[in-house]
Image (cartoon, rainbow, N blue to C red; front, side, top):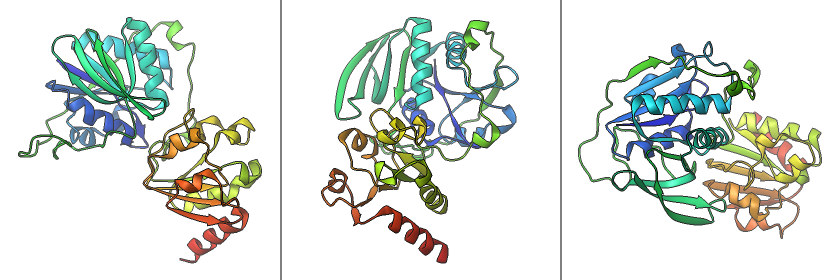
Length: 332
């Protein structure tokens, strides 16, 4: 019996969201936890995956499938699920994880549950689920009846825990030692129809911290004033080792791409620090940044809704505050 986990990479390391998914996958109790990685076999972080209980890694190299093709990725997972006798296939609740698992559900005719926080096998073909609804404002208890459970893991609700440490709620006992890991280079059989939609990343756009996994996010809203106004925010994010995020109005105006949007219809973030600049704080945006450990708001409006959620607030013009922060950081 095997649990398959689609594992995304952040540079040369497993993405934090995928480590959270592996942690949940390990709790399902199957003897084999397998990671499926779309990357060059020479760059697969096997030891890091072994630390999280992975016993097998199935590598699909660029020579077999170049770029991101959601239907083809799902076809690969369907084949591996049949080949390994998988009882469950899971992924992180990222844009890619949700998209690929949705395709997998369509290909196999199986139900798929998104953004789960808890999955418990209930004997035979049944799993009990708890999952986020309405961007995490509600928790739904559900039962999935299927020969293979397909689900994604809410990125902000499960902590990543190494197999050498007891998971939250586990019975105290000696730590598990990472098992020996087997790496298999898998060559899938794909049809042309599976490759109709495919995205190829340029080297300049690949790697680095993603919005979903960044430890620091510098957010910009309408108050930034326009596309040119994001240069100081980019500089500040670079100094802090973080990335830039934006509110929905910024993407609606075409100032920044949708992939940088934080919110209910964008990305849910869980950074150590979220610095919100010129963002009013609509409820849809708060749903996306509520998982941040610390929120600092910079806004000219003392009545902006985001101030009610902020740990600290600066009432002032971000065009004066951000350059002062950058200058101070450079001076250090």
